[in-house]
Amino acid sequence: MSGSRSISQPNIFVAGIGLGLSFDLYGVCLWGGAQLFAGTVDGSVALVYVIACLTGSLVGFLAKPLARLLRRDVGPLYRQGMYVSGILGMALLLLSAWRGVPPFLLGAGLLVGFTIAALFMFWVGDISRRTPGATRKVLALSMVFSAALNALFYGIDPLYLLPVMCPVLILASLALCWRFGRTGFGKGGLDPSVGTHAARQGRPHPLKRSLQELTAPAVCAVVLLLVVPTINYVALEDCLEWRSRFLLIASAQLLAAVVLFVLLGVIKRGPLMVTAFVGAAPLLAVALFLFPFLGTAYQYALLLTGSFLHFIVTALLMADSVKVAARQAVDPQVLYGPLGALTFLVTYGAAQVMDSIVRSGISRDIQMVATAFFLVYLFGVVFLFVQNLKRERERQEAVEDNSVISTLKQKDWRWGKDGREAECCRFIRRRYDLSERETEVLEKLLHGKNAPAIAEELVISPNTVRSHIKRLYRALGVHSRQELIESFEELLDEFVR
Image (cartoon, rainbow, N blue to C red; front, side, top):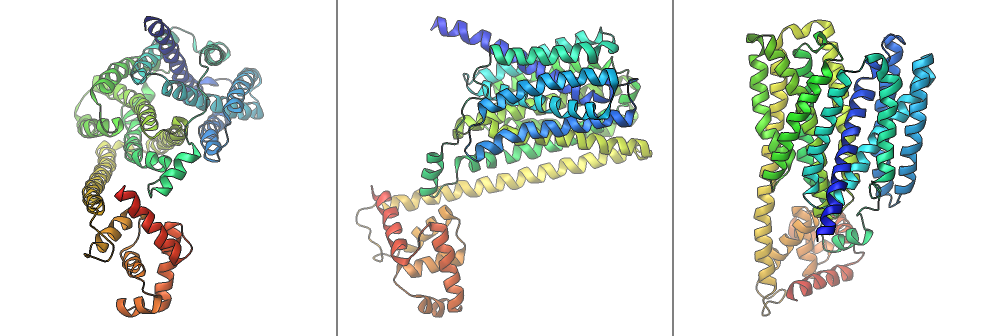
């Protein structure tokens, strides 16, 4: 026991360092892309690198999930691609600093962006294969280590950031993955037999259930990420020297480390992202409304809040993905890949929109900007309310299903004897997501009636009845009335057993 403990702690520490390096690469090489080439190339040319870096990161997030959905294990290939893209991207970055040629910038952006996304995916996979408490420790450690690096960057001349620090960050990240992170791109869940068994039982595929669970966290993350650029631009971020922002970001990450350690220890049930949204969004809305009446110190506090919020959202989506993947036995990278791509895309898009607003002068009316965010927050609240109503309805249906199953298990019950067929058909309706009319047609079919008789009884055309029957067969996976009856009898036998 003591031997396993001595092994797990250093591994968690290394994973925290690796993820922290990924956060710094994301901040310096993507968000700091325009500043990296300041004085070297024209601003419009540097934009080529930033857009290419974002595109490469989207490919990095989505490539492996798409391959896994096709039931192809691309872990080794993806891992090799991360190493190759990281080294080539680093070389092109150095060439870009020397020559500033657009093709070099384009290639560097694509490769570095892919490497950043692949590193995030790698450490999510690595975290998911550890003990349940590892997520909390790794995420908190990653914020602390990234904060230490950002504080270090403050003391480094910006001229050395591109030719020295970016290659160091890339090489250190790849070296950690190669030396310590052996399981980051290992085989995940998505066992085909699991999905087949679920389909036979009339339940959704585990991957579908996982994505449904992550819908609410994703919406809450989008709402909060939309306000991050609003906070940063409203707080007059441009008046802060770029190098000084490293200290502010370091402070935000230390705060995020404390909050993450507390949240992941306290919240045991439900999506972490939703809980954070419910608690944070009203406070942010009030803060934005109060902004015009407060001074410069408050502006920096608001800017600190924006950076803190971005790190919290990213980390909580990772934690939710790992948590849901463990519960549903699916590959966490398949879940986190689309969420990571979404956060990158939404953050960049919102920043561009906010930049356009600032340049047009509309943002002088701060109250209007705050009102816009409040409406976005209101949308999030309405969405959560609808989700809660849906969950409550599903809970009530589960209670009814248990009652029907209890009825079916009674040995003295037989089909067509005591009028409980309707209850059974309603149960099947929910299990196979049938319409009300299809359920009525099912009940008539099981009583031996043909299409004309059903049409006459339900006062609809025979062709309409035949269309309902075809959809019934397709939903239940049968091809004839006899197969339908046999499938129904098997279902009854399952309940009786």
